[in-house]
Length: 284
Image (cartoon, rainbow, N blue to C red; front, side, top):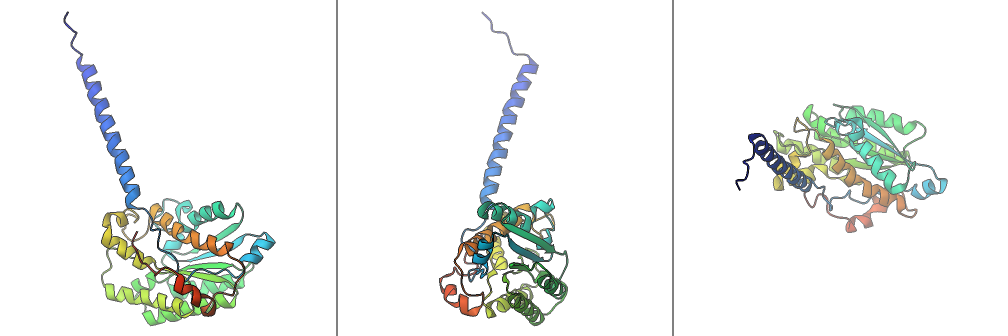
């Protein structure tokens, strides 16, 4: 008995289905590989460790931890798909999950294009307003390079801001400049990075070494770094901001869980610095 030949229509549908299944498989594989390529580092931490002298008091009073995130476009969220995807918003979600609903309040005081002098002025106003923040996350320094600033001046301004935070009784964590592939004068750029690091180091203030981390990542996995940058290859995208939030959240959760200790500063962090991970020891 002769078997009927399949019609052209049924043959075409079979080809379409097979091609569709093949493309779907490629898409799934690409998604898995992409997720692996942009995994955040698990060995980059702010150093020295963050100390929240008011942690025990905050827990006892049952009030939320008040965080001020201040800086320029990285804080404002340039390159993110929405305000919900900027790093302070993503950090708030992680801290809420770890500490409990209503236990964290984050104010996003990021301003696109702002440099250190303007940020310092706003920081001082925030510190005088009530209620004052318990913790300041200060992202600083990139625009000072771009707009022709001076590294010595930047170090002075950052130091003045850190002193103001300490005088207000709050803790502070500094986030230095981002690395991006189009830096023209690397030596000059890195002199500004060093200025931010020196201001923090002189005061024993925790620093998240974002620049060194991203530079190492670019050398080891250029495609992975590009996957976290926005269309301009300068600002972060949602994935880049998620990574920044993931690097900050554990330090804050650990500081909130710690028993009451000495105020943040050189005396209280000198012994801890010896045990802390080296800054930027590994790439993403």
